[in-house]
Image 1 (cartoon, one colour):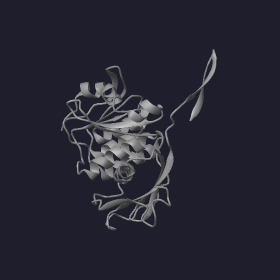
Image 2: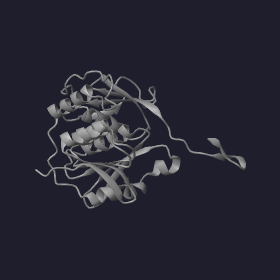
Image 3: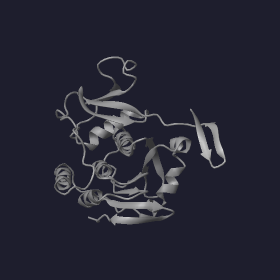
Image 4: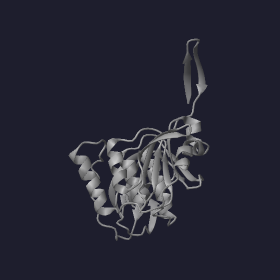
Length: 257
């Protein structure tokens, strides 16, 4: 589109690239479990990753993923995805919301629920030097951000510093779901010896997704929340924030079992 770039010298019209944002309805075996605003692309990964992180699959194998199980994908503009387990996954409960901040009792309940279904991560301690270098290593692969400046990134990091792959989306949680979904579809979960990079703050929800995937560590370019720190400690994940220019703050250090 054409935008006006204003400065004290006046305004000039110039073309600008904007990121696309559209709703995606996620179904599990025909039941609606969530609707999220996302950047189209890697939709199957997003749907599978979401179902895994929320515990909806309960360890059941994904048999298929497709657009709109009840009609034409064109009719729904490719905005409905169904994850299929052949009816073997537990009947999902509607998702009414997520914990968004550390709020005392509700935060403790959220962590207790995770501890009930997830064991603490048992993995080699991830190298701190690799976490600190992650923002520079991932930046080269952020094509959509370079074009628009309007998306977040999530990436899988190997201990030796390699960036295995990157996913971008207007939502941080969607980018992480796309990463986790790709790993699940590749049969690579739990990852154990890998780390998750996120370009933004580290919320409870992102740490929850990292824990569910088995990541040894999560590193963010901004701050974590207090509930995210408590969650990382419960899950035995290294949690680092404000990773910039080769420096970072370490909030939780993984304990070697």
